[in-house]
Image (cartoon, rainbow, N blue to C red; front, side, top):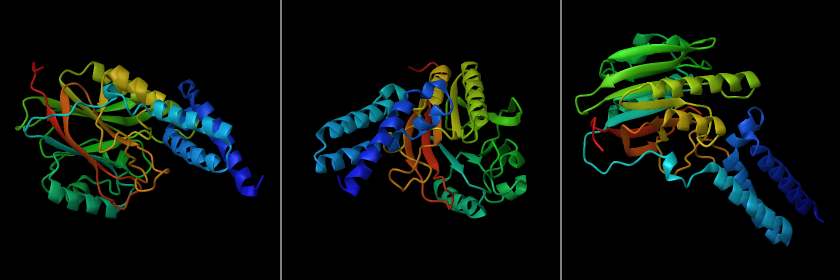
Length: 321
C-alpha cells in the first residue's frame, strides 16, 4: 500500500466517523457541530469514492458512495416542504437583505452602494462596525428608521438591527435568558402590499461550546413561540450560525411553521461562499405562509466573511388562498 493510498484510507475512516457522529446530532452538542458540516462530509465522500475507485478498493468505494448518498439525504435539499413557495404574479415586492458586516466599515459602505442600486425596503444587519444611529443611517439616507439596539449588535455581539424606509408600526426588543436584545421584532406596513409584515431579526453566536449551543437553542425556541402567536405575514432573518437542515433549525422551522427562502441552488453557502467544500449556509431568510418568494440571490462580496442574502418577497392578501 502506497503512502497516498494509505492517506485515502485514513481519510475514508475520518469521513465515516464524522458521518456516523452526525446521526447523533439531535442529541445536541457536540454532535450538532457535525450536522453543520454535512455538505462537507458529502463532498469528501464523493471525492473518496473517486479515489477509492482509482485504487480499486471496490468495497470501500461502495461504502463511500453510501456515505455520500446518506449525507445528501440528511441535507434534505430535495424536500419541497422545506422551502418557501415561489410567486408567479407581477405584484410589487418587498425587497429584503440580511447581511453580517463582520465589524467592517468597508462592508457597510459597500452595502450602501448596493442599496443605491437595489433600493431595499428592509435591511437586517448583524456585527455592525458603528454603534451610533446617525452613523448608521448616514450610509442609507432614505432608510430613516432603526429597530433594535445598534450598540448590542456590534462585532461579536448576539443581536441584530432592522433598517427600513417605512416606520415600524410596533417594535419589541425581546430578552432571552441573559441576552437583553436577543430578538428584534418589528411590524411594517407597506403601501405596495395588501398585508403587513412582522419581522424578526436574530444573531445567535456560533454554537462552539455547550453554553453557546443552549443559547442558540433558546433563541430559536423563543422565535418559534413568537411566530405561533403572530397573525398574518411573518419573516425571520439574520445570521443564524446554523445550517438550515440541522436538528435545531428543523425543529425551529416546524414549530414556527416557516420555510426557508432558497437563493439560487437549494444549498447556497453564505459564509466563505466562493470556496467549494468550505463555505456554510449560515445567513437565512425564513417566511410563513403569508409570504411568497419572488426572487432570491446571494449578493456580491462586501469585504465581510459573510455574503449578503437578497430577496424580493410578495405578501399574500389576507384571506387569499
